Amino acid sequence: AQSVTQLGSHVSVSEGALVLLRCNYSSSVPPYLFWYVQYPNQGLQLLLKYTTGATLVKGINGFEAEFKKSETSFHLTKPSAHMSDAAEYFCAVSFYNKLIFGAGTRLAVHP
Amino acid sequence: DAGVTQSPTHLIKTRGQQVTLRCSPKSGHDTVSWYQQALGQGPQFIFQYYEEEERQRGNFPDRFSGHQFPNYSSELNVNALLLGDSALYLCASSLPSGGSYEQYFGPGTRLTVT
Image (cartoon, rainbow over all chains, first blue to last red; front, side, top):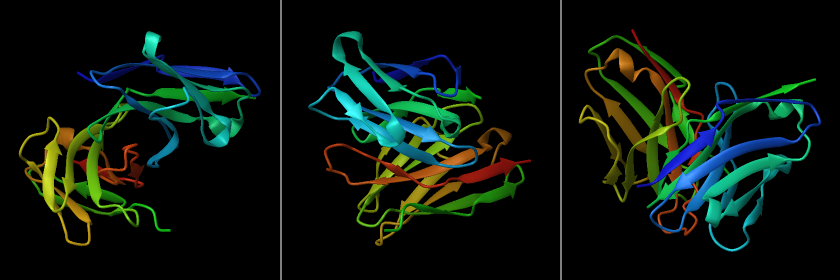
């Protein structure tokens, strides 16, 4: 069965600090993995995706994620946090074109 | 390029009533999926439509039904509303054989059941 676990429902960082949001997945087939961001009272915006090929994936707004098959992980990082990064982040795995989401991580950025 | 659009933005209904939510997919997309996002949770898959047929369904009761029109737009219908149906309902569109299964989401419809 496919599932996604996001470690840490809340993460707080200082502006300019490294952002690390953790995601582990379970999949019976080679996974397609995604990170989405949700700002308050809005829908989901795709940050980045992994399908095949290069395991380090770069996305929008300076975010990137690395697919590690041996660790079944797809952690999201950004070298320097900005106030505008404060939002809810969701990791998802695709199973036959159906997205299965984690519970989300709320990122707070402090001055 | 128009993205995914949903209507209405907000909706308030009473228990036992019926509701219809609407979605227009991104230009060029022919597959529509619906998700329910309860407060503080990740989105949960309701069902997916392709070629005007329900292609797959998540763990939701038959009170949740849908429809896809020839222009690929879609409706989500919920009958006999319960308080627990209060949530953000998200529509997403995609290509069925795009390979990457990338889905684009609309802004959602916030349903409140009182």
